[in-house]
Image (tube, rainbow, N blue to C red):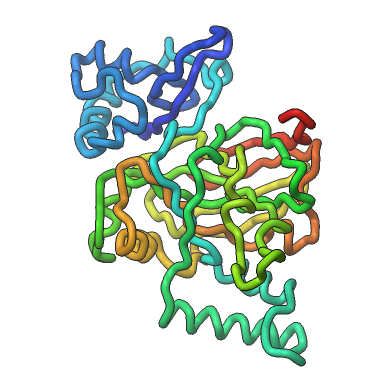
Length: 332
C-alpha cells in the first residue's frame, strides 16, 4: 500500500474557499470528496477529517482500498493550498507534562529545585533517581488544553502582550480513532488512528499563581491562549509509522537548534498515557494526546520567543511546522 496522510486545506487563490479534507501523497493533495465520487465510496462523502475519524476503521480501509490506483498528477500542489489544523477541530486535547527524562532533569537543575546544599552534579543525580522512581511507581501527569488554542502548522504565532516568556515545546501527538473508557494498556494502541505534530506553546511566567500560592500552577492561562497549539500539517495513519518510540524531534528558532532529541526519551509510553487518561475521562474519536516535550525548551537557555522569530519544528515521518512570531496588536 502506498503511504498517505490526511489534512484539512483550502485553496489560496480562491477567496473564502471552503475547507476540505484532503488525501496527501508525495506533496500532492486531492479532496477526499472527489475520490469518494470517483470510486463510488459513499462512506467517504461529505466528511471532514474529524468525521472520518468517527468511523476510522471503515474510513482507513476505504482509503487504503484505492490509494494504489490513484494518479496524483492532476492533484493540487501543496504550495497552492492553505493548511488548516490537520483535524479541524478535535473535541478534546490532553497533554502529558514532564514526560521526557532529560527535559525534567534539566528543568530540575536549571530551576535548582531539590534538596538544599546539593551541587549541580548532585542535583542532577538526585533528579535522575527521582525519574527512575517515578516511572516505577508513579503515573503520567495530564492536563487539558482548550481547542481554541489550536492553529495551523504554518500560521503566524501571535505573542500575547500578557507574557514576557513565551516558550516552545515540540511534541509527538497521538490521534484517537475510537471511543474508549478504562482502556487496558495491552489494548491501548488499538485506539490510535495516527500521529501528528504539535507545539505546546507555554507562557512560562504565567504558570505559577502568585496571588494565592497554594493554587500552584495555572495551565489554563499559560498554555490555553489562541494559537498556542499549532497542529499538523498532517495526520499520518499509525500503519505508516513503524516505531513511534524512535522518531527524531528537531526544533530551530531563528536558525538556532534548540531541541534535537528522540521520542525514545519518553518516560510514560503512549499505551500508559491512553490507559491513564481513559481511567478518568472518556476518549473520543479525533481526540489529541500531546505526549510530552523533550529537552531544549527556552527555559533551559533563558531565551524566549520574540517578535520576528521563526520556529521550524519537525518529527521524522510527520512533516514539519513553521511559525513566524508576531507581536500582538493593541486592539487584538
